[in-house]
Image (cartoon, rainbow, N blue to C red; front, side, top):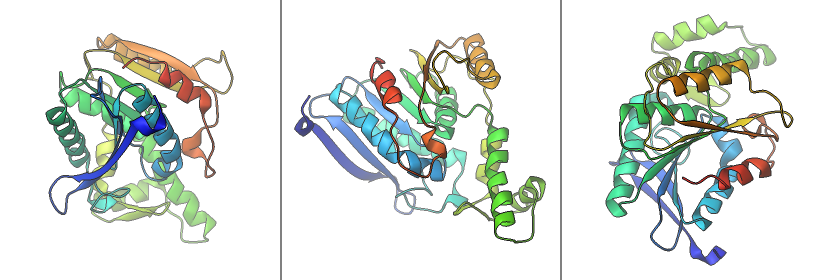
Length: 274
């Protein structure tokens, strides 16, 4: 497909004051399926924007309509991050899916990166029968561990600025009491952090009618996946999910401040039929 056969459509969905931004990158003709991208959290979203857009163009060239979401309170969407919750983010995904299917009634796939991958699984668990396939890029597998990692960024930042120190337990107390906390340039609230901590694979049975495609970073070819990743994959399989795993090598872009490329991940992903 030529570049001029790929179309780009930005728009907002939702009611005034609650609108969230979407960017659709698609083929010109009727798509064979929708792909809805569920973004990562905070600065990870900004670090990976170029890579996600590159992959979306590959999907469009293959005949898909790929819609990228900025959740309410993030990116170009309305609202503040400290106002967000997992319930609101689920509603964003649901409205995007319903709108796309109303406009073109073809199957819907979810594609999530990092925390967005976990949120995509959680949405699929809450919406039986809605999703055809799920594509995961380096998914977070423990909400509690992920929140702890986020809070540690504040601990390190305070130490680096010679400000009064805080522990992760003290930060959690602030959040639970209703305070908003600044972490790496983002002001978060207790509701969203609590929602993320409670994310669990425990009851995620038959999440989609097709396959969960799991792309996981390894440092060198042939390296084993981590124990936590293997445990999560095994848990999903025990819950009647078809999971296919695709190891890839390259820089962990979600952790880097400089822009880089991940050609192996793009190549692996583009070979997957959704």
